[in-house]
Length: 114
Image (cartoon, rainbow, N blue to C red; front, top):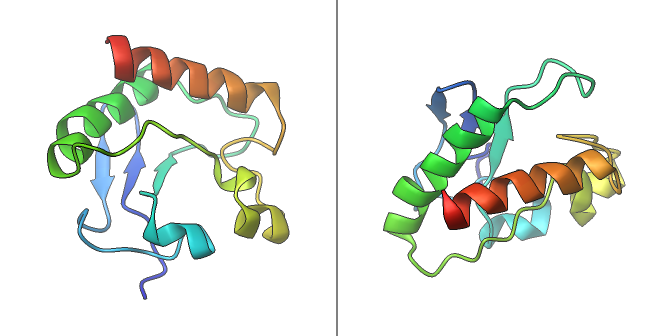
């Protein structure tokens, strides 16, 4: 098992770490069902920009959905999965934060309508 995630998302940049037919171990037991993407964010206090969200949504629509057309639009932060909660993860935002809910709304609006 690789200790990795699929992509890191920057502003108009995508760094691919694993192909979509390989599984990392980024989210513990969830890793075999979900894809792992991280937003390049120096600290939790730094915002995830609109361009990063646009870049992620491009990847989701044009890469992930092309390879896995039935993949659900279910976006959790590392801090929201059991392994992340147990490890005290705060990325991209702390569990239960309004910032995570806002990020999810931003992603869903572009994935489904943009």
